[in-house]
Length: 506
Ligand code: GLU
Image (cartoon, rainbow, N blue to C red; front, side, top):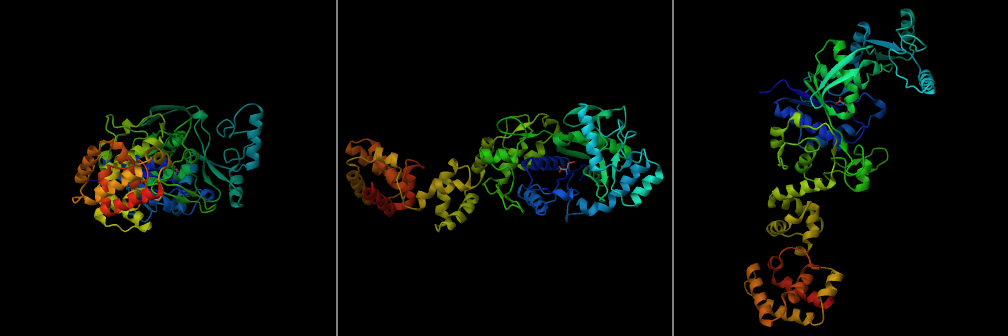
């Protein structure tokens, strides 16, 4: 049965979704599913100056790839819709007016120049300018708390630019509770009178966010630590409206792999890993940013890795399916301190997931890569190849490098290995080996191994003298799976061709 737990992921469509955003979405999703609740996607697009047209679709595609679908959102089950704030524009003024009428908010007419002059004046005295009870009731800030009512109306009617600010309380101690951080105490004198509504008819993030969380019946606000400083204002806004506040949980930051601070795109560029789930093309510059999907990550491995960036199950288990994550997830086990991102651990997760995928599934992923190279081997053959190499692969994209010798004769031979292992007399020895191979009837891996080894033993020479040049001839380097498996796979004729090629070239 559906519970009343309702959470939301509320990104602003200002660009591609950073993995920190994906983690926020994931934790909301896990929390909702664990509690039989509802996961809502709300697009917070009130800031027109930062709006990027392809960003919303990117967010939706990313959640889809991650397999964490929303229950309600734009064009999906719009029970409390619309779910795009720009389409709810008409609604917010009413709420700003409620606060004006109850004395919790006021009109301010200060121009950017006036505010700047104030700021500079404070700075000159070594102080920081906070727009609140310190200065809003006197001095020369121009607002409806100091101007006569008629003058305020006249200014509004003549279209003078205004904003509506929240009137933060004076000399109060605000007690708040965060599900992850516990009790938080704040002195309201340190808060500034944040802008709630702008003269262009648009609400700011703070007002729209609170009004929508209320109207959409959100019970838990789970979001990044960067929103913690907004929590006092949000709690006060609920109080001002007389609404019950949801519970809050502020997730820890995702930190750089090396050095201090928040993980940024620059870290990814520098150290060579993506910070976005999907590839992203900047609409203006045309720049392309790498994505986990295109880099060859399995979405379940990516999600498993993200789940562990800030949460742990309290046991040694690290590999969790989405179902297991839902079952085990608990906000109480989310840490307060930042989580260091590790590109190596991310790869490790992918490699672990690689081993859990069936040969069949991996073969389906490898076949198109082979087709692109003009290789059309039957699926049964490719299945065998995949099964023999997957243990050493991190990505499906590694398959070709690990297996090309199954499909084609080496075009070149590792120089160092050739020098060391292809000596005087090797060519003659390989010619003799060709004769031996020619006579082998049962060309299974076991039998070729048995017959070739018997021949080497009878000749009373070291195994390496034959095996290394043989591997070099078949693979081109001293790498790859069990040699006799390769021989059995490529067959007698191809084995001989490759030996002849090597004799000619080395
Ligand atoms: N629109 C905000 C963001 O971009 C939402 C913050 C919140 O969840 O309250 O992250």
